[in-house]
Length: 416
Image 1 (cartoon, one colour):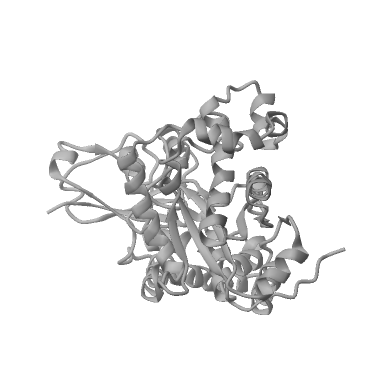
Image 2 (image 1 turned 90 degrees about the horizontal axis):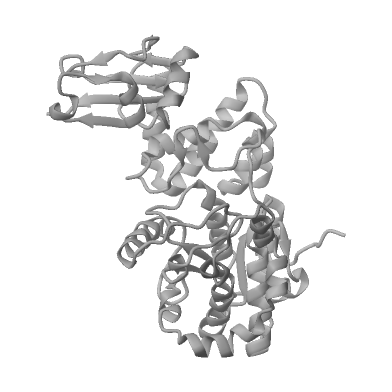
């Protein structure tokens, strides 16, 4: 039987498709009805920006706040030093404290676009290094480690998938799930946090934290997961031919971000509207059901709504204007991603393959050659068939437009 929620938060997220599983719908719903429930998602600082793969859970926190609850964004200053092994085939590269701090600073800029962090009743941002860096190893083993069964930890799918492939799982990584469970315990102890949210791949870690908190503090807390999202053609959400779709504008321009959403597959439009915009569900369904050329208008609405939330209405309007200039009028547009080269970098000439690589239109030389072989490469809208073509400083004196297929473009120009 499908649970029928009473609280605004569960009503909204269940209708919009955010929910994969919950440890106790009824008890969580009753707690949410009282309002002001603290709930958190943890983010390890493995890169200088969050990416589109994080965006569903960021929107989940936004709805959590908009429906009267209190979100906590937990930055993994401590856990990043270990690395989450969940569903990975190898160990994450270890980062130093300075790099972790720099990554957290980049990630914070994104959260500030979606959540209100006012001191009295707003969202909280905390760093688990506050308590993890201070742990005494022997005390931690005695007080916390004794509550964990290795047999049970080995049964988690995230661990089993690694061991089944006979790939090494270091003791360092094995400790990650204990540290994440301890985070939930500390957030409950310090801030009364009752809920951990996360992707469905975090289910085992979330349950660990709930079990630990019950054992140590005898407190009832809850977990809720979102589905792992793939596009209708089976690709992992957030990946494109050019790599990750970053949320920070200095790592991916607002135009490229807008274009990612404009290129959504027809079958995904309605679902993405519900997850990534705040448009009413009925409007999302109506737009998602459009066919023919009308679905393209829906994709523009999707791109504008998502880009406005992250980069602002002005950036969304500029991106749409550039897209119209490029696609409808054959121009170059003012907002295309631009690669600026110094005269020294160009020297006596630079290969067009290098330009495609450095502008981010392709991810490798092999991909570039395939693009040329498939007649998908263009220079100033003219077909490019010679992958060995060299451009000198005179050719780049005025900006040139590179195109990979019909939808991805970049400008290249010589720095003055």
